[in-house]
Structures are given as structure tokens and as C-alpha cells.
Length: 391
Image (cartoon, rainbow, N blue to C red; front, side, top):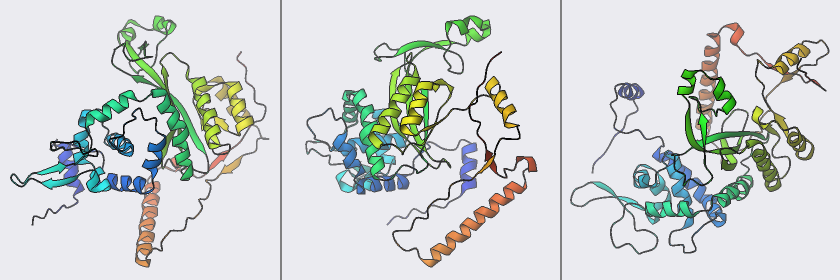
């Protein structure tokens, strides 16, 4: 019997990184990944997603829940090329979670090397295989899936799966955003366009380009792109985030009507009251759409402004008036959730000591900061009927 012993030695690891003494660095933990897949498989999340997924295949040799799981494990590893799927299977925890049906690690009787043995799902394999399904199967299914149907599936059936499991925070904080997706300069990317971008990947119009210096113009380049508009859910502490809607459109399309259409569809699927605060940037300024969100859906829209804008200076001046009422902002108290099983007293005491050490460490860090940088409390005020004019 061979026994491998591992010892945690963080200084040694950090020093090895600094000296470049490593061959490969894996971003996903095998144990954590295995626990993740056990959880979503036991909770029938994969089965629910597979039932409504816009599957382009009529013949189902491979269980479709495994196709979804394979895409998830590739995303967890930060891998996008399907030919890297065998490497992901070897280094990930998917085999541990799904058991012998997916595959198992075995030792070669002659060489003693560790290898992967997978029987497959359709009993048509005449040779040994090292992945539960061929990576080319994943590629072909992804290519044949209708893009519009896939995005609608996420915003409808995906949201319902989240909602049935109480995944949405009660404060209802959502963030809308848009960004460019750059692709190789190949006209076969349907719906893509070529736009001029500066060195920071910001689009440059003809008027803006004419005002640039010769040096700045030399750093601009044409790039083929799409525009991706997203609707993301998170909480006040940023403990989590997940997308509830995604829309990929032409790079020339304006993001404003696309986002408010996503908001409208989300409310139709999830109902009113789930989305309470929507945080946007100035590119989504639309008075009619904002009024609709507030009056019909009860959604507050928060759009930050820059400190060099006139409206910012006007607001600061008005907030100095004596009749402005300020109120202290306190984080809402979380409801205490009872554990499904009683926690042993020894574990409870150990957790209390750990929390106390964390509080002491936080107080120690605050004591090192200058007094003007220590946040004591937060206050907020509102101005009714605020209007600003440019001279």
C-alpha cells in the first residue's frame, strides 16, 4: 500500500510561485468541485435544467444533464476550448461526484500509471476512453444550439430554478451592465461588426477620432465585436452574484432598450417585488423606461454620477441647506436560520472562538488607520423635485 501525505505550508508555496517553480496551476479545487456537483445533482438542479434546455438533439445517447455538467466544469476551470475537456476531467471532481456511471480512476496493471476509465453512456465504444463523452460531442451540441433560445432559457427557466430554491436575496439588489465581446476578425461571426477602439477598449466615434492627437490615433485599432447586456443579482455584502439574464447583440446596438427589455421579462417570469433596486451606469438613462420601472414594477433605479458633473455640484450645494433631513443608514438584520441538524457543543464553541478572533483582528486593523479614514456611520438624505440647468 502506498501512502501520500500532504502538509499545508503556505510560505513554501508562495516562495515557489515567486521563483517560478511550478508546472501548472489549477484554479478549481477537486474537492470543492465534487461537493458542488453532488449538491446540484442531489437537489435535482441538473435534471430540471436539462428538461427545459433548448436541446438541438432528438437522439439522446448521452444524458443531457451530463452535457450541462460538462459545460459547468469547464467554466469552473476557466476553460473554453472543448479539446481541453479531457484535462478538466482528469483534474476536476466531476468523476467523484457522479460515480462509476461517469468514470473512475484506475491503475494500469503493467505500468502502474494512474489513468481514467470511462464506459460511456451509449454502449457503443469499442476502445478505451478517458472521458465520459467525447469532447467533439460537446462542441457539436454547443454549435447547434440556437443562441436566442439559449438566452431566453436562462432568463426564464433558469430564473424559475433559482426562485424555487429561494436563491434571491430579500433586498432585491440587481446590477445592469453592458460590455463588448471581442472575437477574431472573421466575417462568419454572424451579427458581429467592426468598430474603432482606443487603447482602453473604449469605442471611438469619427468626431472623437478627429480630436485625438497623432500619438493617440496610432494606438486605436479596429476590432470585430458583439455587445453583451447582462442583468446580475447580488447582495449588499457581495457574498455572491449570478446572472439572471444575458443578451448578446450587434456591437452597434444601443444597450438601453435591450436592458429594460430584460428587466421587463424578468418581472414577468419572477413576479413583482423580487427586484427592488437596479444599479445602472449613465448609459442607461431613459426617463420613460425608468418611470415604468418605478411606477409599474416598484423598482428603484440608482445611477451614479461623476464628481465633475454640474448636477453633482448642484446637489452638494442643496444638501448643505439646514432643512435637509439626514437619516442614518443601517444594514438590515439577517434572519437567524436554524440548522437542519443540531450542532455539537464543541463545534459551536470553536466557531465562537473563531468569530471572536476575527473581530479582534478587524479591530486591530482599524486601530492602525488614521481617524479620518475610519467609517463611523452612514447617513443619507433625499431632495424632492430636484432640477438642474446648464448656463
